[in-house]
Image (cartoon, rainbow, N blue to C red; front, side, top):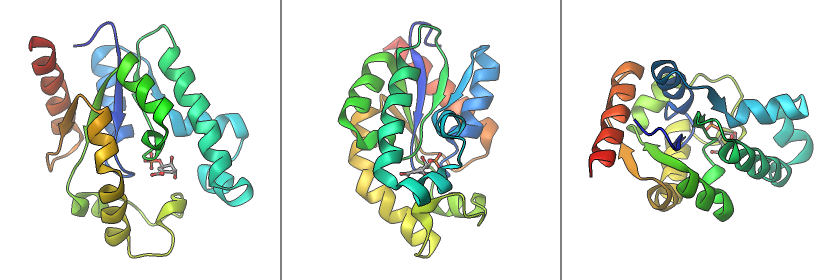
Length: 175
Ligand code: S3P
């Protein structure tokens, strides 16, 4: 596994970044960092409240800084990023430079089955969920593809996805 780099998970919302990241951090004995959770702790608002009260641009600005701080940290961690963190070019550059970046890209239907309708994801408001997720994936696929060193697209639960990420990284390192 990559000792000198952060392990960075990217992908659309519901792709399993947080659950998979936690599992991998446990296995690797690393700290787990969730950039959405760091943002929420900093502003003492949920992501949904932050979008509502201050708007998406304010959220993105904080996200850019939180992602940069996480990537610049010396201690190598497993970092789960928000689905839109790749929209920022500077964040993408830093991810590629400081991390081994894995794009989690499960089938949309698996994500739909997993997401609960809890109102915590402001970008899902308004459209049928499967349609909106497919749209977000289409819009961002080229960014995930650019930033990621590898893509894990299996239709499986957390343990199997964590196994697939671990072996994808081993393959990368052996290359
Ligand atoms: C977003 C994804 C969310 C969160 C915010 C915006 C996005 O994170 O950062 O609602 O732009 O796709 P998750 O991918 O962890 O749900």
